[in-house]
Figure 1 (cartoon, rainbow, N blue to C red):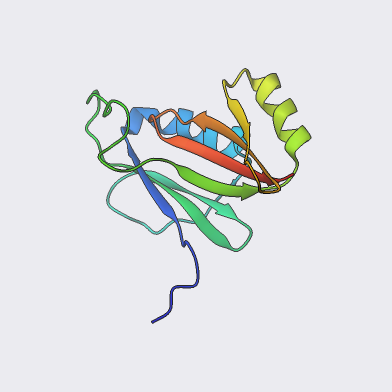
Figure 2 (tube, rainbow, N blue to C red):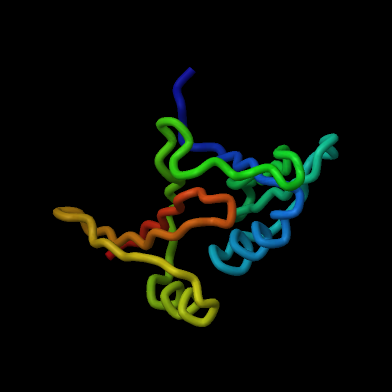
Length: 127
């Protein structure tokens, strides 16, 4: 069973956080909201082309505190992206805080942001 790549990431949040998650993953990151199975809890699936790559699961109770900082050994989600200048402009227009870092010795450039549930998100661009 060879692994062929990352299928998706699953992020848990509270139901009241779904509008902010929809805005972040759709408008800020630029993924398309798409079909999702009829689970017994609310959520959103975001698609990149033909793949649902980010699954949002509203499985934390209303009003529950979000975990602070990294959850255990989880560090961040990294997504390959195109359009560095366009992304910089979109983040500026939307007032989204971010930081940038070129990757030493590799032709890559990263932008780091944080989603409304506190998950660190890396967008990686070819430099």
